[in-house]
Each structure stands twice: as structure tokens, then as C-alpha cells.
Amino acid sequence: VHRLPPPLSAKVVGSFAYLTVKDRLPTILTKVIDTIHRNKNKFFEEYGEEGIQAEKQTISLLSKLRNELQTDKPVLALTDGLPDTESWNQYLQRHQGSEGDQESVSWFKSTWLYVECYMYRRIQEALWLNPPISDYDVFSEGKTQSFFESQQAVITLCTHLENIKERMQELSKNQLLEHFNKLLQVSLWGNKCDLSISAGQDNSQKISPIDSLRSLQPFILVDDSNMVWSTLISAQTLGQSGKITTGRVDIVLDNAGFELVTDLVLADFLISSGLTREIHFHGKSFPWFVSDVTAKDFHWTIRQTMAANHKWMSKSGFEWQNYMKEGVWSYHDHPFWTQPHEFCDMATDAPDLYATLQGADLVLFKGDLNYRKLTGDRDWNHMVGFDCALRGFGPTPLCSLRTLKANVQVGLQPGQGEKLTSQDPDWMTSGKYAIIQFHSTKS
Ligand code: F6P
Ligand code: MG
Image (cartoon, rainbow, N blue to C red; front, side):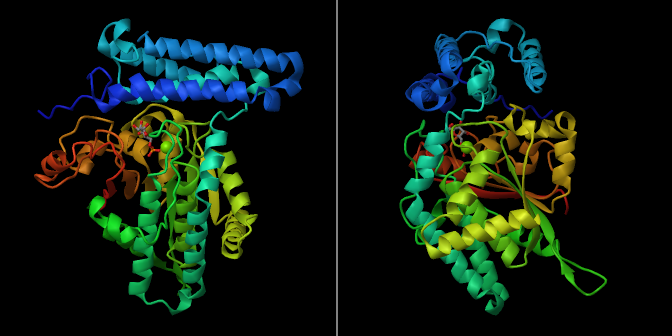
């Protein structure tokens, strides 16, 4: 009988999960508290006494949260009575049931994926319980800063894109494929720039995202980009009128800042080359894992790009705004993306979202957290197949574009994992390596 490997957990002392819960999460919480405190004149005092009280209350709830975490207290049920509260609490109960006693669902003893997601939901609870400041995004400063610090790289990338678009008609199929591969890799490496791994420290793109691709190539451990390409091609159908119709691509976004720009550039290329008809972007409905994209970040990024003092950058921005207006691009969020569930639960726990993804011809999952959820964040043997780790999840052909930042990696060649471990013990958590890993239920 096939036994499932255990989920990663901070109970393994010294593991990356352990260090995250012990060091990185409290650091992130301390920064959040500091941000609220620092901005009290700017954002909260306009609500008068009520604003000042809300700020104090929120900070005290967050300090309490940090203390629960650091002293390994049991994970508490949520009390804010929002639409997703029930499902969080049920999940908690289920876990208590399966592990036996209450004690086991404490910060260091339960699964890493669950407690890490739970922390971001508790931050939100502290804000939601204090209405005048409920909408405040505690991570917004970091996200905007990382966008501006990557400005040069954004300009380079937009210029590159507009150059391709000017000559699009003359491109041979091979040249098109070459450009596609490059922009797919730019979007892949864009995932290096997240603010959760760096606990909020600056982690923006400083060098040219195009010139660096060649030297990064050896660090791509799995490269299924040819399957991604053939999925796009086979989604093309010949209509009765003799016109070719192309497919829909969904991009499950990860981080705002430079990574989001790389995703938008890839999406623009897919549309303007005619490889794809429509793109659906999926983001988070509240601030998540420090730098993840919310609706606000998404629209802000397009507006900033339009307003840039650079010809090609602002041209890209206007184009993106048009795609949105015409419905060629659309932005969606769903509560499932901010829950702790692994994706194999999606069909049961969020059937509407599963059905939505089934409508796409290809889904790109950006980033590390999505990979952890795809594979259930388990301590898999590296040679186990991606299809096996997905445990039945497969609404449509899908591909993970991820730099490695957690101890989970499947689908490697025999010996590949061992070799990496001997050469570079931190290969799974340094963000230095990446994968383009594809799965399709269709044969
Ligand atoms: O461990 C680093 C970490 O905080 C993980 O918890 C998480 O998987 C990752 O960073 C977030 O990375 P990404 O933005 O690529 O999902
Ligand atoms: Mg992220």
C-alpha cells in the first residue's frame, strides 16, 4: 500500500519549517506592528479617537498573536464571523480530530502550511475586528517599494516586449517560440523577488532580467516548457469561417512588484502574438504572505506602468489597461486562495473555482506557495512523479513556475536530488533553483 509522506512541520527541529516558524514569522509580525504604529498619524488619526483606539487594539491583538506563536500555544478558532471563518474553524477541528488532542494543533506541532497560512488570516482578523482600519494593507509599503526599486528592470523588460511587438508580423514560428521561452523564464525567475522569504527585506530585481537568463539556465531543474508550448498550440482550433481561435490561459498570480510585471509581460506576449485569446488572472482577496497580489496591487501596478516617465513602459501600461477594458484580460479572486487547503481538496471545497479552472486550456501556477499547495507540502521522495504528488488535482493542463523556497520537490531524475544535496545543501530553500513543471491528465 502506498503511504503518504508526512506534511512538513516545525516539529522537525532545525528544518526550514522550524526556522520559519521560530524566526521568520515573528520577524514579519514585528514589522507589521511597527508599520501600523509608524503610520498612525497618516492613516488612523483621521478617524479621531476611534482611529486611535483601533490602532491600539490592533497592535495589542497582534502582540498577543506573536506571543501565542513564540510560546507554542494551541492554534485558536477565529472569532471575526466573516464568510470564511467557519471553514477555517472546521479545518482546525478536523485537524484536532485527526491528531487526537488539542495540544497537537499548536504552532510548532501542526503542519507548517496550515500555521503559516493561519498567521496571515489572524493578522487580517486583528484588522477586521477594528473597523476604521479594516481596509489597511499592512504590507502595502513593502510592495510599492519593491516595485519602484525594480524600476530599471521593468523598463528593460517593457522595452524588450515592445520591440518584439513591433516586429511580431515578421517572426517565424521558431522565433516566436524563442521569445516565448525567454518570457516564460523571465516570469519564472521573477519569483525570486518575494518578500516573505526575505521577511520583508528588500528583494527587488536589480539586474537585467533578459541578459541574466543564459547564466540562470543550469539552475532550472525541471524544464517542461515544450509541453507548455504544445498545449498552447493544440488549444488552437479552426472555426467554420476558416478563422483560427486560440485558447484561454489562467495565471494564478503570486507576488506583486517585479514578479507581477513579468507575468503581465508574458500575458501581453501571449495575447499580442495571437497564441492566446484570453487571460484570467487570479489573485488574493486580502494581503497574504507579505507580497502576494491583491486586486488593489494589480490595478495599482497597471496605473503606475501607464504613468511611467518612459515611452515603452507607459505604452505597455496603456495596452494592459485596454486589455482589461476589452475583457481580453480579467482579474478574479476567490476565498479558496487564502485558505490553508491543498489543491487536491479544491474540487470538494471550492467546486466553483475548480469548474472555473476547467474552462481554461492551461493554468500557470506562480511561485513557491502554490507549489506547496499543489503537492500538499509533503516530505515527498524527489523521484515521485508530479502527477502522484498532485493526488488527483488536474482541472486542465497545468504548469508550476517556481523558484524553490521550501523542502518539497518532486519529479526529479534518479540521483538528481542526492547530487544537489551534496553540492549545495540549501538547494531547496535558497531560491537559487527553479522548475517549470507541467502536468496534463490528457494523454
Ligand atoms: O519559506 C519561504 C516562504 O515564506 C514560504 O513559506 C513560502 O512558500 C514562500 O516563502 C513564499 O514564496 P512565494 O512568494 O514564491 O509563494
Ligand atoms: Mg508570495
